[in-house]
Length: 603
Image (cartoon, rainbow, N blue to C red; front, top):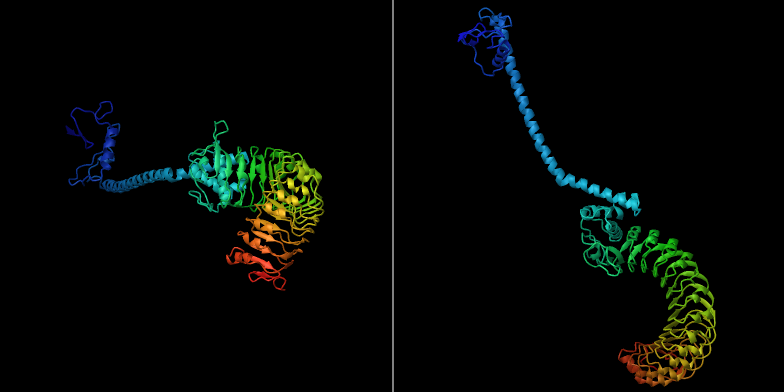
């Protein structure tokens, strides 16, 4: 080994040339740089010459000069070394800072991914579900885009509930998803809550509603399974096709949503006796399977959509009574030829009663308490299946047509508070013998009460009060064995009270007041052991009050005043007042016509 002129130790016999191998100039330069970059090399205490590089020709560079020959060069080189050491420290600091930053960034990224999976991911899935339901609902035209996007609307709340609770297992294109959506809209429209997770509304019975349970288990819902024969009904925890939705008297308060048209197999909708408001959605006309629409006793208003009559030709029951509907009854209703029951009573309908003659299956027709005008509708006489007819409290005029006798199935004829006049058809009670109630009060009927009333074997209520009937009480009244109420007050009837009236063992009320009836009160009246009210006031009755009245233990009211009765009220009758059974006993005891110490009212 020998110290060469470049300051590096070499093996003997090695060459400094490139061709001779050993340390080439490039390797020497690498070694020099390594030494220059060393952070902690010691200062040179012995002035040993610094290693120099050799060029390709073997000459020595200026850096090979000894310290004593190149002190200025040494000083410059030392300064450069110090600069490099400072730079390297900053490089290391920068590398450490970058490493720490990258590490923190990775940690933050992992945390962010976890949060996205737990939170952000769910939010993305939630939004995706909502968009899917939006698209499906808009495609089916169940709701408007504005309703879906209006925060707080029933449609918006229903979508949020589907996405939050139901969306995980119920996709938008599922056959039952739109049914759940429609029912959710009904709930949010009428329950008074906007909770999207566990909604509890004001309904009286909300059992299983707005839960993940199958809608066939929800209160008031019956379903038909996907693959059944159409006869069996499901009530278990499944999602089937809804066939019945009935929530009567359940405190529903709000609008009836059009979205119910999504219940395409619905056959019965009964939301009666609730607080529904607003108008009837015309979209419900698309429910071609609907047979029973019962919305009685709500606060619905507006018109009946004409589409109902045209598209709901399979309807069997339309009951919209006791609401606030107005306008005319649509003529298109005549297309409901399968209708059995039509109930539009106690609304604000006006105009004429439409032609109903094609509705030959109709058994119940209730149009009372409206503002209907015109003559008695002749088309009604064509409804040969009719069982109940009630047109009371309207502005109908004219005569009672004799063709009414063709309606041999009639059990109830109720035509009170109209402007009907003329006599009762003579043949009416010969053919219409199934009557259980005949009520013609507050009209202008004249003539005598037909003796054919004896054919009414099943009648329970006979009401002819406040007309202009004359003649006498037919003795045939005694043949009406099931009669409970006999009211002919406010007429011009004379004659006497027939003794045969005592045969009416079921009679509870008799009103003969405000007529011209004469004679005595028959003692046989004491045989009416179920009688509760006896109104005989304002007639021309005479004689004494029969003591047999005291046998009527059920009697609550006895009105005997404004007659020509004399004598004293029998003690047997007064005993009824002391037992607090007879709570009202009125007689002409004020002017001394009759003596009564037990009367509750003297005239």
